[in-house]
Image (cartoon, rainbow, N blue to C red; front, side, top):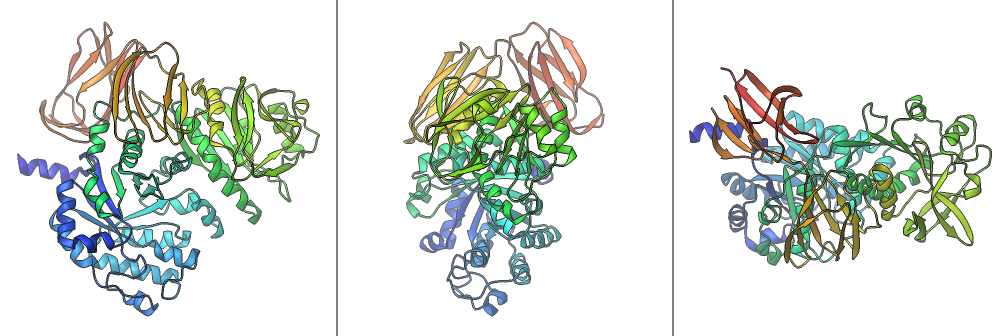
Length: 638
């Protein structure tokens, strides 16, 4: 039986529990502890992977390419690390981000800048060493494509560490983030700073959704980052509940932090809570064009994504970022340039979204709002004067606005543009407005299902009105990250009052709050149509929403089952042979569907599935308006 289970884990590695990794940005920690002791400690703590920067300033593996480039050799640390780690079943990923720094920023570490051919040779040298993966950040797009091809050829994982402003760097390469990110296996977040970068980093998930890539999570407890182990634990636990990532990495520099941090604390934090995938899709369409003048629009989109991601998360939407509209999205958010020197004309695929009336369509223009024939028709949809000239006003100060009588910050203090549209220029509804230098401007305009967002480089608090328009959800400005589903989580990067109306049928709430010091508070409360909570900086709040009619699939779920016997806990569900589907519900009768085909309807809460099956199946249990789903690999050849 043990051999059979080992074979299953080999065949289905996705079925394991969450994998934990440690990222050593330099080699000082490993050198201080010693390779053997370091690997042994990682094994005892339950780490499944080690990510090491093999060339922080010197390089720490035999590399004829780097030697020819004149880089300084610090000794071969990588070979003994791989040998020790692999003997314990721990993977080793080699980070080569310094190659990009040398090109992007011209860092003054020794040696010449590498070419694409040099990078390819260095990657091949590392693969010869036996690394399990290659990691980088800020690589030029042409490098990514080359490295991806090499890694795929050698069955090595290629990880791109995404930080919000890399879309700007990709544009320097006359490429787009979409083109670049298609050339990697994994996109990893870089959750460092306790500010709206946490919301902006959700851009990684949007790209993963649309490009069918896997999302990994990383954070750091250093003073320049989140500031403490407890705070890093809160952020990593939040991401685990948001995205159910296969790998979670802690970026550790100091021996003290290495000794203090126990990766499995995340499992303890989220015990009794589970990942709940969002049911609706917000399609963010980024149509910038190919002109060099669009660089500012890419940078502003980076800033804006905090409010897009937060508003979608607060309303129970999953975000897909694409260049072209998706066919079956529930709502659309178009981000584009209007006019800088010349008008940017939108393709017919985007224009067609303005000819339907059953879905919400948001439009944000990064520069001037044009008034040629095409754009006059677009203006009519939003009730904006078709003939008047509107131009963008530049600023660098947070600007307050009002929505439903509540003050919030509409424009950020980094930098922004907005069009000089005044309320008298609008035939539609002005939902939000603000005063600048004695003049009142319209910031959010709505007519029918079309909503115009005035400004680029917006503040994260704009998620408040947008989420309200998406799903009547977030009801107050909130300085934090919101993710609403049947399990909801919130992280506050400033002291902030959370007031939210859930887009679900909710009877009561199971609540767990963990503060920045690691103190935990738990309670169960009744839900009366609105949830209010005062959060402090660094707080993690996790809520399990319990419906008036609830249903939950008890079995099969996150286990290996053989001929209806529960064998062992796994991260996913695997079934060999027949399986009894068992449901917990408050309803009088239930329905059970397999891949949307009704298989059972009745009062019993158990039903035996014993049909021929092979592959991935969705098991769905329904009771009135409540439902629960489980995806399972089923093999039943009887």
